[in-house]
Amino acid sequence: MKDVIVSISTPLGIGAISIVRMSGKDAIMIANKVFLGTNLNKVLSHTIHYGKIVDKKEVIDEVLVSVFKAPKTFTKEDIVEINTHGGINVTNKVLILLLKKGARLALPGEFTKRAYLNGRIDLIEAEAVMDLINAKSDEALTLALSGVEKKQTLLVKSLRDKILELMANIEVNIDYPEIEDIEEVTNKLLASKTKAIKEEITEILNKSKSSSIIKEGINVIIVGRPNVGKSSLLNLLLQEEKAIVTDVAGTTRDMVEGKINLDGIILNIIDTAGIRNTSNIVEKIGVEKTKERLKTSDLILMILDNTDKLNFDDKKLLKQIKDKRHILVVNKVDQEKKIDYKNDNIIYISAKENIGIDELKNKIKELFNLEKIKAKDFNALSNKRQILLLESTLNIVKQIEKGIKDNIPIDILEIDIKKAYQTLGEIIGENTNNELIDQIFASFCLGK
Image 1 (tube, rainbow, N blue to C red):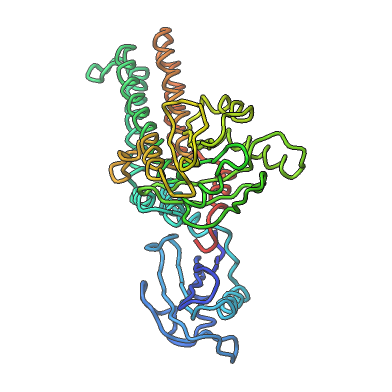
Image 2 (cartoon, rainbow, N blue to C red; image 1 turned 135 degrees about the vertical axis):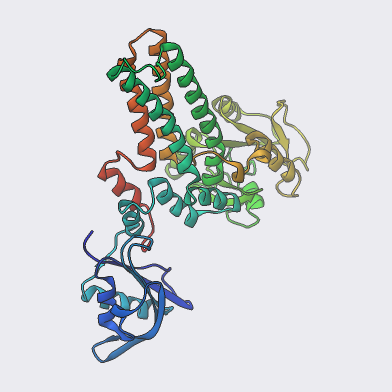
């Protein structure tokens, strides 16, 4: 990390300003080579300076240059931010000039990666930075801020401290059995402490399911046979004509997607091809895609036609979704009823006349208990990587409990206790391999 990295940190396009950011030991020196104004090598840290960016005798732009000196910076390295006039051409000229003077184009997320590698932030905080950028609701924003503010880090560290204390007691008992004032770690004591740790992890994981909903939203798929009103419902929920609606069966042949905000929770809604037996190759591919999506969706809205009895395709689809979270939506209730199906999980609507949509939304809230999901009170994780590692820790703890019941010696059980400690460490970025680190930061945006 001895080189200087540079990137445009604002979206490309026309705007009031653009920011070109550099980080590294020689960042100030490189900026000074192209800056006509105050000598940046002699200015105080955390100051802003007016001047011009020049390439030999050509003035490229009037700018404000912010100088931040290590170690009190985001990356713990010298940072320079050049505020140019907004515009693709002028911003790119400044970037190219800095590259010519010795900087290297930053990789996606490399500024945040340097902050992590230099000990400025841990991995939870780093991932929370990206969550903050991508937050699509106030609840998701609050959750991301809890990560940036170390609340989730402290949660993991608290668990690690309890396991570390247990490990230390075991080590002292083994190495210094003659010391009498150290608590002896018996199977009974180990069982009690392991149970408490397991309960705490389980509670965090239960809350994390809700936090994941806040961050990722709920993936909702609309399914049913052709012409039951799937596209009409999507358009009504989105309040826009996103899907084509016709009386011709098989109009929707590919996924049509949209998002709505339901009381702070994002619904990722997908309209799909009508499920039926078809000889049309394109429509057949659409039907297969629909079947694949059924496996991964959080919620299935199956649309039934109020003006028609259940047919073979309806019954087959009902059988497929019976064990999945779903709502049966009977459409066209403004017309004569012919459907003969009864179920407790049915909402009646008319997509054409805008009838029953509030009832449908309330049913979704009820199914996911959205009324009780609040980000501000969360002692939980929201990142899938973090949750998977915490689940792995829980499985290790359960294995320790089994070992205690089987009277396995404590010094042998300590191997699994250390493994639980290390797995928790991976959540905050300890014991994490370079390949995984590269993969995590590769998903970040440029300039961050």
